[in-house]
Length: 292
Length: 334
Image (cartoon, rainbow over all chains, first blue to last red; front, side, top):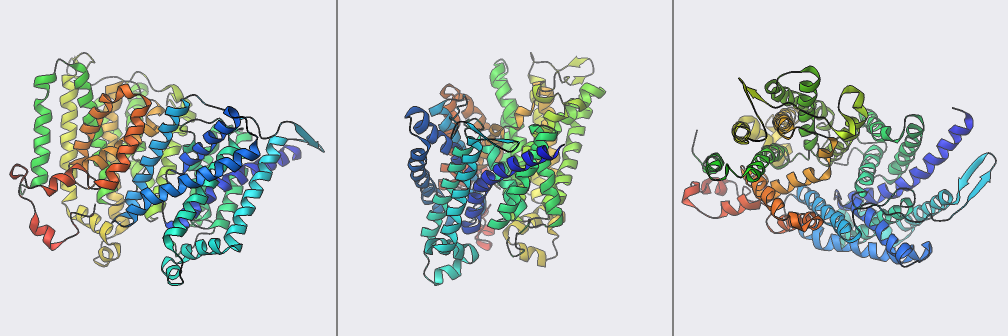
């Protein structure tokens, strides 16, 4: 393995890691704020890609407009899920158990709705931008660069929202202490709605960014849900910075394993990495021990 | 053994299954569906032990089914062991796998268990595919898995009756074990951990140990029926680790009633036949099942057995009102 190969692996690992971060952070956010293990999360990833397919391929919009149009739809889908499925269950016993199974039911519904509407055959999206650019010895496709740029922009917007706006701070407050947040006047229901909306946008936009590279299929979201799960657990549930680190770590591992042994070995290696991390740090890289 | 509603319902179900072939034995398709229902009934009941009674979100249960199937499949094809030994081997292999997975996973709590076991479940499929050199058959599957033999008689696909009664015996054994387990000291402490962990632990119950033992038993039962399944369907492939079976078993548990023994058995029969009836709907069928799953959880969280428990049918034994009064949580919790 030459130095150039290594740099190429690193760059591709970082790109894929950043997109994985977008998927995983939405999942982490939902768990952190509302304690819901959101198993239909992967279906929103799929639906993001399918909605983009409608606008980009069927209606011929460019990607900027695709994002502008798809994000509100995803936002509403996420909020509807919270309002009509999660909230009624919150009032009853065994919330964890019921919401987990209800999430699976919603996932089944959404996935096969996608299959019924769009067919079982895979679809592909055109690349974000065509062409390549050469820097020194390395050739980058514009596709890869725009993916990187878009992911950075979305990640930065998320950081800005969480750290600099009132709403975002309220989200953080609920994640830390729901009762305390209520005492100072934060409406829990509003925060939950917001969290589901934003996380769904994150899942869906990651779906749009990855769709030109992978194909879109009705059950394709599961693979990414599992990846998000592994990243989130490795990073520490509810810890956003931990999610960032583990997404990069596992992204680079994926690029490395893919280069050395082939893509089929990626998931076994991820699982091994997860086991190792949990053996050393049972709550993930940056997970707090207070978390349950 | 005190006669109660659970025993009466279970016995009723088993007797109905035992006499059904008198009517349907010539209709091999219905017989096949009934056998499949029994297979799913065992898998669902075993899963319900963990999910419903223990509140442990072990999502790797379908993986144990596959491990049992592959253990007997590989051993009987490559090593030529008898399928009867294969049944045992499947149970032992899955039980061991249950312990191996349980060791790291069960030290974790609640949601972490779900995440770890789901991750594990997703890894088994790729492992079978990459392990083609070890004789797993890879993506194409393992074929042909030899049938059972009894003396000079060889079980075959033309005559489903022997398969049917063999499966019924396995079902009865598994239901008996499950019933005994639920009402044993171990089962009670297991359920106590679900309801109030700090309290159960203050009584000296070792959470890790009881969870591990029950996981191993549930895995072994699943492996046993997985092994039977392998011999029955002749071909096994990693496709069985797909989402369909995973979700169908969950729907069966929810439909019949989680922690409502023998609810999952009823769920298995209803859902298997419903699935067959809805087959003309094609891909809308699974869409409908997804909707059914959500609706059941929202409206009827205790499933059919929860509904039955509310009605006082003399035939099903006396309603245990005293226990309900002592513990008002009984009808509400899983």
